[in-house]
View 1 (cartoon, rainbow, N blue to C red):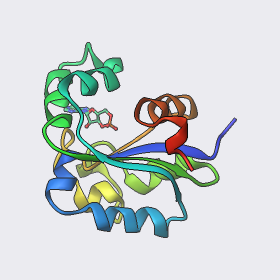
View 2: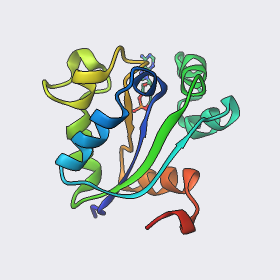
View 3: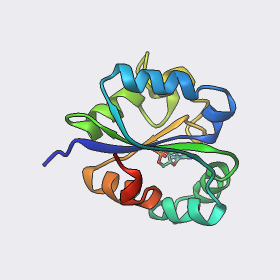
View 4: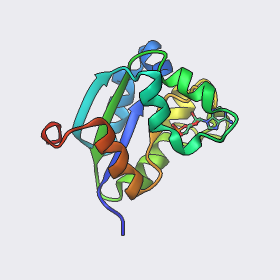
Length: 139
Ligand code: CMP
């Protein structure tokens, strides 16, 4: 059953390029409300833990290095059908394949440095949200 929450990160490439405001505006315009948000930086250890599901992939080392290379914005977002609608808003993982107007089409540089993360299921949205936020930080 679909829930109404998803989890996102604005990644170090988009933060460095000054796109936090533009990306948050797209998220708000698309009807998502912010339940939790923080500007933070992942250690290599925490980035490795967050992406542990990709441990065996050839790009894992690169992914961990990149995700711990600078600050990120982590957020829990709410909207009806949040996970699927957010993935539509951000576009395909590879920006070259992302639909025009999507966040990755507008702001991502490459498949590795792809501007934003979006949870891929309700279950992962809940796990990833709890990874970054205590219950007292969610409103
Ligand atoms: P994300 O949605 O955060 O989930 C896993 C991440 O791994 C993905 O976005 C990409 O940033 C990264 N990724 C996926 N495939 C590749 C790849 N072929 N090369 C480098 N990074 C990748």
